[in-house]
Length: 480
Image (cartoon, rainbow, N blue to C red; front, side, top):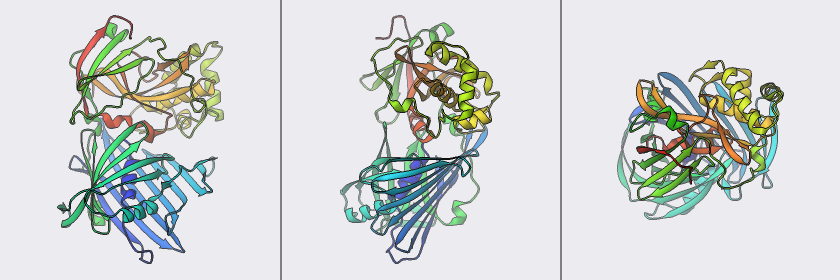
């Protein structure tokens, strides 16, 4: 789940006020399938010729009975005409905090990530035409609220350092129920084009384009933000076991010998045949047949389409800190005298499996360096550490999120559960390594591939709750 989506959507419909207006503030209660899971606050301050927008989200979810706190706070500073100047993002996942500071000038962003004692600096291009909240607000005012109006804007996301195109279509006015009474509002249908995926939402605004309600699909149910007062927004959460919604039932038990070979899965979308954006990999082939997607997975696959890994798959980033001394030392310790890349990765997989001594769901999502220093967590912590150790050993790696078969999990039998593992480019192909389980097999279905960034990573899990598994078959021949 991409939590920065909440902030992106709210910022694309930021409260409207004249340039001389005093600071504005809005509170929202956050509901998942009708149950309160958190609060969202939005503030806008105009001072000294600058507009500062501050937006904070805090939610609490459950995973198999474990409470997981997630939060994102973003501060953006712009000129009165919407020119980006700077931003700050603080993301929190179960106690793990990521801070990103950026300064925009001359088409470049100077970025500082990490803590005050361990800052990491770099520069990157500012996406041409990208806007922060005030720029998005002004673009919306120019477009207006006439029914049928279609407008596009490129919204920059500080938490993931990328931009997403937001397409808005204005609808006809309607009366909307809110915690503090009914209001006449205008609906706006939005499509957010994230890298490799799309997300749709619906917002309701007043004549000044102040948002009062926002909904989007998540895990097969509605995530809703409703404007209310502070007491309403910060009232105790009701809790929602989001993990239970992500389990996908298997039509039948899968045998160990089947999983050691190749499996063919027939998947269907639960909502009007919406497209499933499943990746093709050297181990996974995807084909469309009518309203179904046929996914064939082979454990020991050979290369299908030769490709050279991009340079970034070898480089360190904020979540795979492969040049950090602790990571470099662990990589040397794990690989020993292994000669080939495949052997080095096999040793890394085995090493990480035993190195992460405490297996639990309490962490949420940690970086590889966090895991190296405090070896605990679930599949995501195993995956990022495997990927970082691979890069430290000179091997291109990436992080995969998807589903893995489990005969029993959290009181459910024969299910596919959300899972993460790593892929490495060895012997001329991308090969999977799963340290959280006993290795990769044909019971793994990839939903998305990323670089370890949790916001990119969770985008694939948006499909959970929206797909069903109709049929599973053993494939006796090589995957075509």
